[in-house]
Structures are given as structure tokens and as C-alpha cells.
Amino acid sequence: MKAEAVRTEQASVAEDGRNAADAAPRAQVDMATRRRTKAEVATTCLMEAVVERGNLWLAYQRVVGNKGAAGVDQLAVSELKDHLKQHWPTIRTRLLVGQYQPQPVRRVDIPKPQGGVRTLGIPTVVDRLIQQALHQVLQPMRQAQQYVAQGKRWVVDIDLRSSLIGSTTIYC
Image 1 (cartoon, one colour):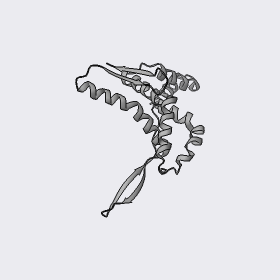
Image 2: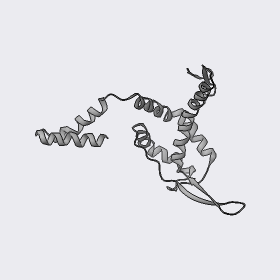
Image 3: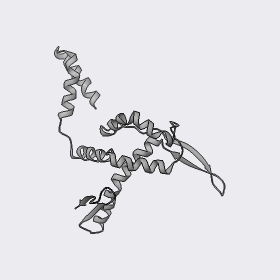
Image 4: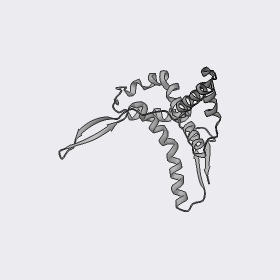
């Protein structure tokens, strides 16, 4: 969408005879300052919670603890830490701006005890990390929605692991 806005601005610049070098920054400012929808704001807030350091650390520990095979990129769980040290800023930015694309899933056929095969899909280790981080943020919200659907009016989520007092989230 941003690239399309830049191209549109550059086309209008060419027609008007303005300096084309000024077009791209002006188009980016227009995109950055436009009003966002409530859904875009909510998605941004959710993704910020997903990439929050504590959430990622817990997701990392779970992915490493689960071990598992490498995906199509052949990156092993044991190599994840070094990979993230080098690539995390780019991955984080892509997640926050909605440009992250997961890698294809590696297909592995596992023989069944009664005959035949079962096909497993193995995501890359980085994609498993992101999936786990998303799960950790979305699961409490889904659980809260179930409580509301059951007629409950208040849901209180208290995390005593993070600190002595803990963090509290109240869903109304």
C-alpha cells in the first residue's frame, strides 16, 4: 500500500512538474499521518504485545524446550538464539508493520502403525517462535470471550510469575 501511494504521488509530481525527489518522502509522511481505523490500532497494540520482550522470552523458552525438527530453512532450534541476535530487528519491524510473511511449511511423511502415512507440516523455528508468542497473547483473550459468552461479567487475569505483585489484566 505504501509503495502504491509513493507511485501515485510520483505520477502526480511528474504531471505537475514538481521535483520527483521530494515525492517519496511526502507520500510516506501522508501514509504515516493518515488516520488509522480502530481495527488497525487494535492490531498494532496486539502486535506490540506479541513482540514485547517478556512474551518473546517465554515463547523462546517454550520453542527451545519443545525441540523439534528444522523447517524448510534448515535452521535448528540450537541455532535460533544466534539467528535472532542478527535478524530480530528486521523480523520485529516486519511484524509491527504487517509485512511479515511466514516461510513455507516442510512436509514430512510419518508411517502410521496400522499402515499408511501421516503428513506433518513443520514450520521454521522462527515461525514457531512467532506462533507461540501470538498464542500467548491471544489465548487469554479467547478464554475471556468464553467467560463472557457464559454470562460472566468480570474476568480477572493475575500473573504472579512476573513479580511479587504480578501484573493484572481485567476484561469487562
